[in-house]
Length: 449
Image 1 (tube, helix red, strand yellow):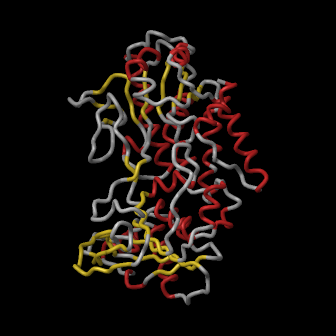
Image 2 (tube, helix red, strand yellow; image 1 turned 30 degrees about the vertical axis):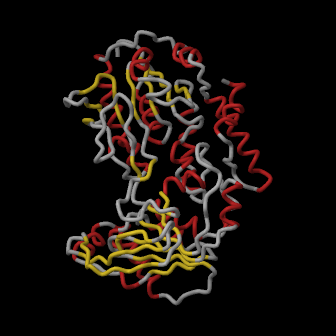
Image 3 (cartoon, rainbow, N blue to C red; image 1 turned 45 degrees about the horizontal axis):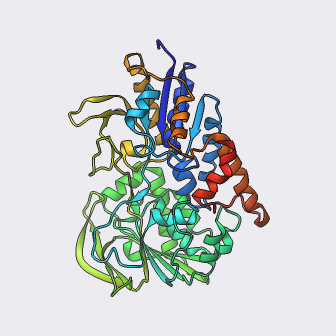
């Protein structure tokens, strides 16, 4: 490269942090500023992963090591398109990588889905993780609950709803969430999968975790344990599919145990309508049948389930960003191998994308790392021909933000908040307590801004 490269990354979830990591490892002649609209880093690892998922939460340690690099600056409480626009970024950076991920619930278009008592899994996850922008209260009033979906998020939601609050005391659960779950009258959580057991999206470890609670009996309803040639092929070809099926089959035939709460797994049941007069009073599902290739079709047979709350976990959805093209169908930014394309299909110079907003909300963290590698390889290949940012002083962008009166947060400020949260959790032997509202976060970080 003819000059040192200055890059802005938008988003501090794994996708954004891995992009920054690839950049600084590729060349000494690069510095990275990584922005987030929240005052805190880590994205859905912090606010989307269930608090009892300590294994996945440990990814934060790896992200911390990357962000702690002196050639990377964290700048929080800055929203792309609102606090800083594309034109302004071009003034300070040679290239920008969009890594805003997907944190909204994908809609489910069935009658009654908007009734009170019907919720999105992403919203619920934000609540139980202490997201600073969500209310502290959640209406946990249902005795019988439906969770729609068969992925890892559905498993997380079902597990949190079914567990007793005391089982979560050693996790990062905020105190308001603990108190609400402790008062929850829930006795039965029903998880509904549209397809069969060989088509589930969760991992064997996620599945086993469902059965780890001494207070929750996992019941697999055998009428949905069916297989076609496509299912058998999936079991032969993919080891984790066969492992999941074996676990589910064993659970379907075991003797029931006497536990105070129950988690029911229903397969080949597709949601048809949320029932109720003024609020959720039930869920209607249509029984499905396998078509031979692992797909399903409706049978016309319907069942009404007496539940008082419904949680949809049918996927995350990215949001369109100002000044950038967006494919509403896929929920992604149009691109070629990470190079963002304009409406004419031409690469927008200096603009790149990675993570879920690039490929959709699929894949594990390992996929995200490889995805970032592809994007950064193309950015570095393009770098010699990119227009040079006119204002290359690293402090110029900070002066611009301060001049607008924006209370941005820094890495040093985050470390101060991190210590504060951990101290809040210490009296209860928890790892940390995330209960700090956004305004208080800024006050805690302010002395170091």
